[in-house]
Length: 56
Image 1 (cartoon, helix red, strand yellow):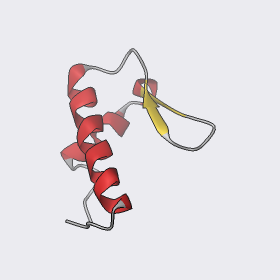
Image 2: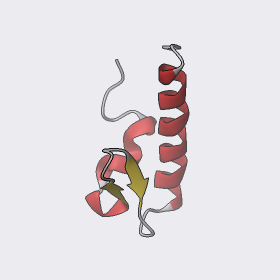
Image 3: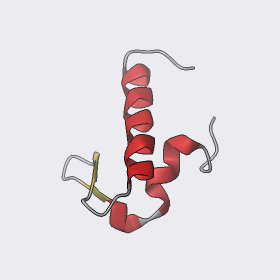
Image 4: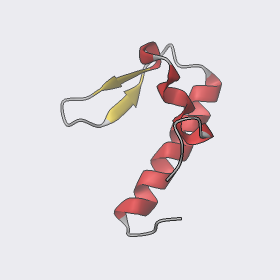
């Protein structure tokens, strides 16, 4: 299991950078910096892999 300090979770470090949708998924806000956007992309790729049964 990855720690909360893993780069994949950087986007969660500031609650102004993201919001939770009605379906409990995450969405970045306009205030998210580029580092958070890169981190969120890594997070989304990992979640897609997990949905497909790949745990790396």
